[in-house]
Length: 264
Length: 268
Image (cartoon, rainbow over all chains, first blue to last red; front, side, top):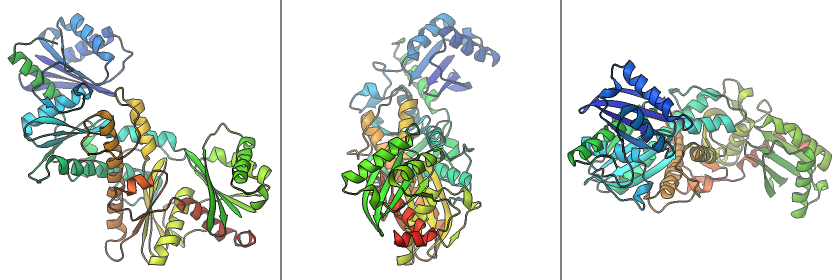
């Protein structure tokens, strides 16, 4: 079975695949100070508690937005799973043409998400990933990665607001129903939820105008743990796929297997 | 002349008014470590550099969202400019009506923006007003054509959200905020410029459109006025912002001071 690991700036998502089927997934927080033994113990314990022995893991595919963690995770795979992981990064064939000034700059998670979205939905398409940053990526009708935009994420921005604005309280992020706030909590819920819905819709519309000027139909797929907060409020999002990055890691791994390549 | 002081979370803005005309304006960092002697000295130096003397300042008023700085600025103004600094609060006289659950909880900065927006733009045109302030927070205020404060929204500011993004992500770097050549960026800097600029345009436009539907489902459409440090950059791309008034908050402080201390304002 394949263990797919997507290391984000805030969270690390793990998924175990049996063939094309995602059997289980876990989310842990990203902590660069954890040791390889701590990660090894964590990963194997999560697997074992869900009924998967570490011996059933025959391959590991990793995408990481936190470069310093890569060597640690490689050593961890070596010691706890006795294998060399496939680390998605420069030099690894993904099957997607990257039209970026410096292809090394595109995060591996973005490529994995783009690969999975194009494979499942076809192009032209826009992937909206709601994480620490809100990242939108454009993929052409022919399946080329064209670039994207990066905006601050919802939680990161809300935290900054509570931290910098002396008089504002910390609030729970829920949809307040109406935009016009008549108390501070309502005004902030409205500003954050409806504000970010507007932010995403504007970026999607402006990207679609460049990606699909004829308006022939551009698909818009959302992923990321915070997407659900805005799904009902964004007019532009057509599908929500919470496992896009994991699926992309699985597809890239399968392509490697088919090409008879090992790790990098 | 009236010295109007707006104490925000990032900046302290001071403006000198000759009647209703703003004749000078200065910006200082909101630094809680600085003392009244430092702020007092700086105020005198700024006045003198622009050809005024401390004696020209005959009255002073402030709106603050940083309570710890209130006493510091009050003492600075009293000791160095020899006038009393009047602190405006949401319970002072302002708009004809304030429809807020607890009017005392409404930030003074928001109320002065609403007051100035209505008096300068809404009332003369017989239209409701939506003020968008691009500051530490992005704040929107709605006022009816008749001058009732109706409510608003508070969203993260462009600067703090961008700063937080840079701090929390390992790969992203600081960027200069300017309009990129295309929306789809082919490098990290262009992608961030696009995401931040067009993203915040969408944030503001999205909120303005929703508020407009709620406060003016029929009848005259609201005047949408932007203010705050990054208002020009956003307004150039926005489809809802009609005009930019960089001095709206200071004008609101002046107007609220006149409403509450009419005798002092006339003598000033």
